[in-house]
Length: 426
Image (tube, rainbow, N blue to C red; front, side, top):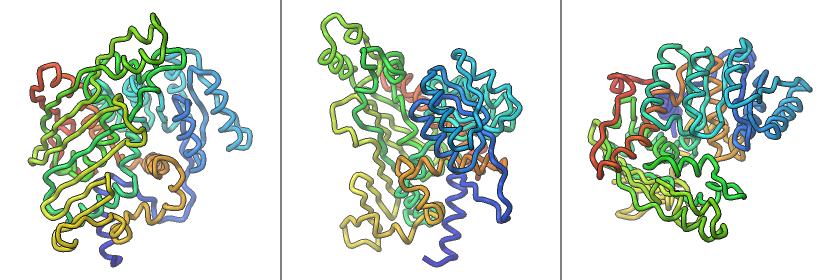
C-alpha cells in the first residue's frame, strides 16, 4: 500500500472511530491520575493494562474487600510501594472518592446496572470517564449521560473493545477507502452460552442473572453493534432511526437451573423475563438495515460469541468464515480469506502497536480501549466512542423491550446528537 493511501486510510478511520493520536513532540506526557470503581476480575485486568501505560492511581473503590486488597497490592507493586487510598464503606462510597481533587479520570468496571449512575456522577464531579459496556439500560439514563457530558464538557468513552479487533479495523479501512461502495446491510450478533455465569455457586443470581430476571429485549447490544456502527458511520454521516424487535419464549434459564439445583431450591423458582433469543431490525436514516441478534441462553458451544456481516454495492464480508468478496477483484463468485487483504488495509493503530496489543485480551481490543482513553484524557481530545455513541448503542436495550411488549411495533430511536449526526466528525 502506498504511503499516501495509508495516510488517507488512517485519517478517514480516525474520523470514524474518533482515534486520538499522540502529539508529535518528544516530551514525556504527564501521567493520567486515574481512579477505578470496581476491581473485580474485569476491573483488575483493565487496571493492570492502565498501569503498564504509565498512569498514577491515587484511589480505588470496591465493596468487595478481597478484590480491593488485591487491586491495592497490584498498584503498590507497579508503583514502588505507593499505596492508593481504598474506598469500601458501601455502595455509594464511590462518591466520596469522586470528591478528591487529585483524580483526573475514572474507570468504571462495576455491574452493568450501575454504569450510567456512576458515570453521570463522575462527569458531574469533573472527571473524565471510561465505562465498561453497556453504557446504560434505560432511555432516561442514556439522555442523562449525554446531558452530563454536554453540560460538564468532560470526556466520556465507552470501552467497547470489539471496535478495535484487527479484522474489524481492517474492514473499517476498506470501507473508508471505498472498497465496499455504498453500504446497504449489516448483520451482527452476540451469541454464546452464558447460562453458568448468571448464577453463583449457591444458586443466587449474579448481576447478569438479575438483568435477565428484570428486563427483556437485547440486553447486551454493544459488542455486536459497535463495530457495525463504525462501519456505517453512525452519528457521523448516518444515524439509527428506528427498530422493530421480536423475542422467543423464556425457557432456557429455568431449564438449566432445574437440572442443576435440587427440588425446592430458590434458583428453580426464578422467573426470567428475557427471551432465549432476541432479534432486532434497525433502519438507518440513509436506508441501511442492521440485523442484530442476542442470545446468551440457548445451548451452544461457548466460543461462538460475536459475528459480523457487511454488504455494500461492491463487496461482501462474513466474519464467521473470515471471508470477503470484492466485485471485480475476487474470482467470480468465490469467497477469499480476509487475510489476503489484511496487510494492504492494515489500520495504522495495528501497524504501530501490534506487539503491545497482542496478548492484552479480547484480540488486542483491551489494549487499545485503554490506550485511546488515556490519550484523550491527556490531551482533552475527542472521545473515540463518546456519550452520544454510547447512548445510541445502549438505547437498543429499552427500545427493543418496548417493541417486544407492543407485539413488534416500530420504535423511533432518539437522535442523541441533537441534529448534528450528518456533520459530526468527532
